[in-house]
Length: 167
Image (cartoon, rainbow, N blue to C red; front, side, top):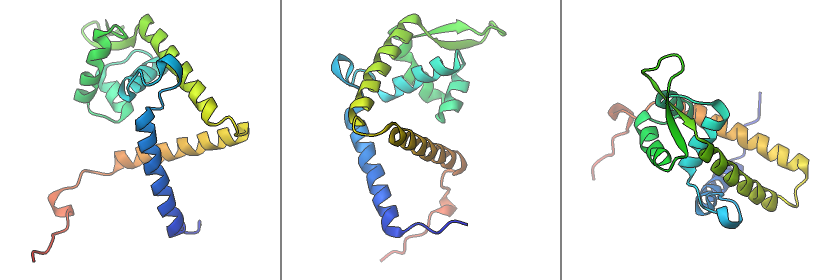
């Protein structure tokens, strides 16, 4: 059994997560050089998933990312329009459509990854490899817990919202 976390430590942790979220959004962790801030978060995450997991349909992409299919459809449209993603027939069911990374999308993703890798190296240049590994492991664990929490918490229904007494 673990000891309950210190309240002050939890306050510090939530504050640092909030600061991290702001800083990450300000820079989009966009890398360095010409590529800095050149790809938004949604596009990067979609291209990255298609690269790692291969062609897939909108529903599978949405489920894997924990977002709604309509959101994926909206986010993918400009990627298709710019030639970073292409639509193809499903290999087993020619009537179904899958999304896949185009050669242009792969090149662009590689460019952005390289720039972001340089930024991570710069930000952690005075860290040991062990510290980088530990931080990455803990951040992965934190993100996994956030994702699990997101998938298990149902949206609030009217009966879950406490009544506010009128004055």
